[in-house]
Length: 310
Image (cartoon, rainbow, N blue to C red):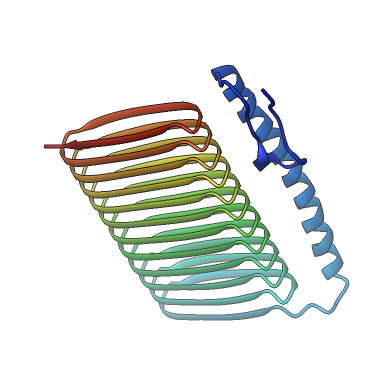
């Protein structure tokens, strides 16, 4: 058995032979340590480039428009060629925009009343696009690094969307249509992508990705659904689709090239899956009501296909 980083890169961990919980824990610790080292080097480079930009002529661009009553906008831009376009149309909307670095871009629109937007961009070439239509919606974006992108769209009332990105080239897309939906995405690393779509009421989608080139897709249509997925490593794929009410989908993948697919059609279904290792595959389909599934795969190259119906 060989365990550890290959070619000096945390996302090329490989295994030959058996697999145990001890090595699973070791894998997590190794990944976390290497991610910390890479992020430390990244942040050092980012802040060096930002400091260099201050020595040149600074030309930031801001276009802010407010139509209505008692709206509040705060914009702070430090660096070179940062661009902000903010529009608030309605009453008692608030927006706080902070940009530090080079060529960060933000476009934010609120149509309605008592909506809130909070954007923090630190680095180079980060982009954020927020659109809210309705009342009492909240959207927040926090980006640290290079060329990260976030797009958040909310329609309805009292929806919450948040995106945190640390690293290079990560992407988040979140869409919510309804009331009291909550979507949260956190990405640390490079090349990770997250898509979260919710329609209905009181749905919750949470995604955490640490590593490189991971893909997360979560779709919910209905009421009171919950989806929570975490991926640590590289090139993992997690897809969850819930159509109905009161469904729960949970997934954890640690390693590389694992695939997890969960489909729930009905009400009150639960699917929980854990995969630790490399190249594992899980497919879970639940049709009907009140099904329960708990799947665990530890090792390499395992495959699981589950179908439940009534």
